[in-house]
Length: 297
Image (cartoon, rainbow, N blue to C red):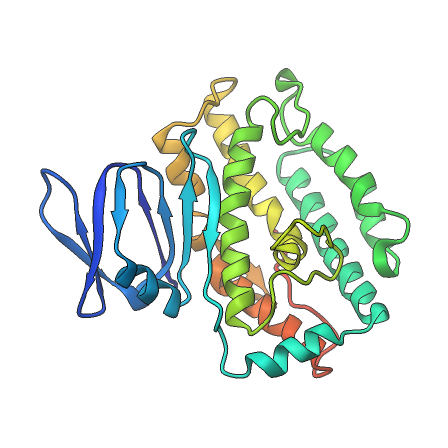
C-alpha cells in the first residue's frame, strides 16, 4: 500500500492517541490519521506543535519527518535509527562493499539517470541523441564523467528558451521548484534506505564529509527526471510566473504517489524506491548484481 504524504502549512497541534495522529487546527473539526499509513510528514509553519510521543511513534513506523524554514523550503529530515530487523548484518555488508562493486553500482546509476533524462527530453520534443550515446558509453565508476557532460546538455535544452535557464540551487525560478521537489524525493529515498537496513550516510559515489545522506543522493539520481517532468508541466502552465504557489506545491507533493515503470511494472514512485533500495541491499550482500531503477517513458 502506498504510504500517505501529509503537509501542514498552517498552525496546528499534532499529538497521538491509540496509534492515530490527531490533528487539531483552530476553527476546524478534530481530524486523525493512522500512523501506520503515513510515509512523509511535512511541517511548514513556525506555529506547529508536535508532541514527543507522536514523534517517537512516527519514527518507529519509519515516517520521514521534514521541517521547513521561513521561506517554506525543506531544511531538516528526521529518520529512525532502527529500520530493519537485520540492520547490523546489512550495515556490515554495506561497509565491506568493495571499490569495484561501488564503481559498477555507480555506473548502473549514471546509465539509468542519463537514460531517463534522454526520455524526458524526447517527451519535451528536444533532441536527445547525445544523451542516448553518453548513456551507452558510461564506464565503470563513470570515469569519463558522462553524468556531468549529460547535465550540461540536458539543462540547456529541457526548458523553453525564454527562461534562459541555468541550474543553480540559489538561482532564479524554476530552480526553486526543482529544489523543493528534490527535497521531497530525497526524503522518500532516505526513508527507503533506512527501511532496507542500510546507512544513508555511506554513499557509493557521494562522499562529502558534511553530508549525512550521501547514499540517498546517489540513489535518487535516476529519479530526479521525474521531478523535472513535473516542473516542466508547471512551466508549461505558468510560463515565467514561477514563484511557488499552493497549487505548485500540491503538484510537487504528489511526487511520492506518481506512477513510474520499474522492472516492466507500473508502481507508485515511493514503492519503486523501496524496490530500488532493497535491490541495492542485495547487491551489497552479493545476492544480486543489478540495482532496479525505473524507466521513464
